[in-house]
Length: 358
Image 1: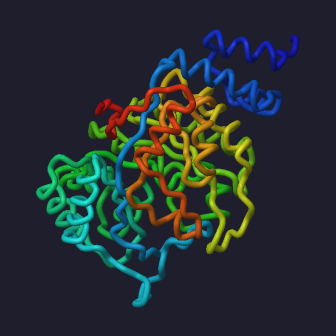
Image 2: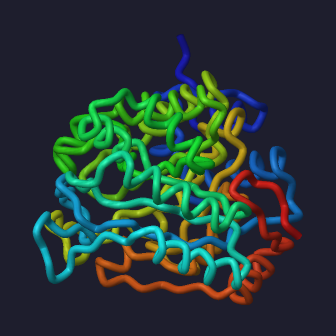
């Protein structure tokens, strides 16, 4: 059986071929950055058009930084009993933060926290319901699969039952946090106490079964191999083919600093090549791909719009987790619009569900 060349495989992808894991690896290893970028850009244009690029205005609010998971890449968490730096934000403070975000055009609150061992179900339900009652027009993009797995253990309840209660209290959708790399050998190395691959996917399956939507993420550029990134993206693809519940995919780089993993992150070129491969693998089933600027920087985030991304994410009115590493990129609305325009696109604000706001 003749070997298919990379050039032939590139042509097949452009003709609509849905790649296998092995083909994705061959494309990544055998294609230059510009070749892979051109393919991803062509697929994105075919799926999303070539006129607009979207962005979001939201605020990341962390209800607590107390966590018992101790992920090696995390500079944000504080241990139980840290009276100096550990905190729990009660509903009243969160409500105030939401009001500030809305004044600046925010439509979404990304609400997440550490795995606090002492907060009970009623605390979360009270917090959600108070925030939603005060701000019924804000989208509460809340929690993450590892948080739900943690809650299940603390509350002694199945994940899906907790989700039902959270949805009734005001939760609208779920971020894709805590995915890191969906390969258990990698997870055991960087976050041995966090939810497993199948647990993460299982929570997302439950979220989608209730009619709620979610996003999916991938944090890469640390101990994983390219094959692990591909395995991760295929997990997302297969679940999306099953449920259709993911709104978008957000790959981002590991950010070293003030954490115990202490590695050097991947380059901007590696980020763009992985972003392009994500478009190639997911294009037929998950059309929204977000370029990250918070860890690789604004220029790389901007270039991502030519490497398969149709969205530049959020201006982020507040961000604490990456900032804990010592990296402090900020973005104003005018700058976001300028970066998008410089790449030849019309900037349009969207909401959580990719509906255009302007």
